Image (cartoon, rainbow, N blue to C red; front, side):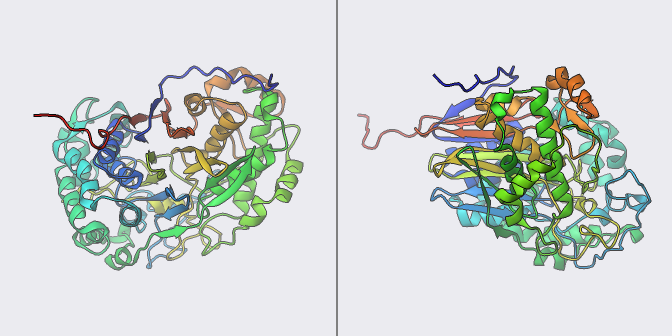
Length: 555
């Protein structure tokens, strides 16, 4: 009989779905339906992931768009891992002093005067999403690109029902949206926030998607849509943007090698810098390997204290070296080493306490998809326009909402994350996979800015240490800190007093990070998808399939 503790019982709000024909998990039911449609049409996981992401640019316009950026982690059927870096970059005309920082000792980065790095044309970085999606689909997909764009075109042209999530997002930024006539006409019809259930039609964007279906990424990166974007960014006088048509034409997504680590006999695979996740998820797990995590008991004050301390150490190292490896020397090998894990364990404190917690600014407003097909291709991809509705305006006649990724850079000069032409933005995106003996076991990811990669680590601990089923692992309560106050979800509130007795300042938050989307893989080919309560996450599973070859019916 095993002496391993029984898995904790988690009360889940959603239910998983299983199938052997393919799996699509996104943060909107219509995004999942678009991916499932493409799988049913004979596409593979790459086709389905790109279709889902394009559909999400319609139904989650506050979160993601073709003029945004992100990272896709692919495991191909042959077993090779490919990370597609489609992160936004600073334009050629930028330099470290384009903004005037406002002194704010409490801010991670000092805010820029007049919000120039947050709202309007001057906040826009060179986008990478469309270029990355088109490249990965062309290289690794099966269908014509136009077939992959088709579901999004239909949604934009016909319209879709506004969710409570979208209505709330529009309401929270209605003042900024109302200041731009183009975006106000779509998101504030009649000057009012659309109620949940109202139909939202995006006719101009449907036409843009039709052009993208014909021309691919070139439509934006040098073509008519790029001309429209660059033209809009050139307006605004002192608040004009820096991105030009030349910047758009010159942008290239990159293929990078994945980061590999080991934990409890499993391979942990994630993206490399500029993403923090691959390095620091593995680093945190390396430190935890030295402890009987399961024996401590899920949710115990002892374990929560340990998790908070491990996160603190990882964020300390992230502050010391993170960002675009073309500009910042990130000591990846050292951070992944067993010796560094041992040194990290020596840095853990017996008692908590407030420590330096300033981190790069990142938006929580992102989307994630996790997709797999019957052939063995898997995609875990996180993409965004950064803040809610990006730079909070729309390119007239196109329906395109640009990113506000420039706020992820430090607006002050002379620092590691200061602005430089061509520099990729820092990110915490964590499209992760877990393997056992070379075979996929789990793929997962979520939105949530700096809360992303610690939350991904917690899900892996839930699965490998606590033996949870997939649904429980993604819905379980979360804890987070970057060295300051410790945030816990209400499911851990019983431990608050004990954590405070250990020296931590504790805040109970409604949720930490965003909706996680995950897939578990069984040896017999069955896949199980799960999405959590923190977003509109929806699982679309394919079972069954075509008739046995040779079956005929008499007529």
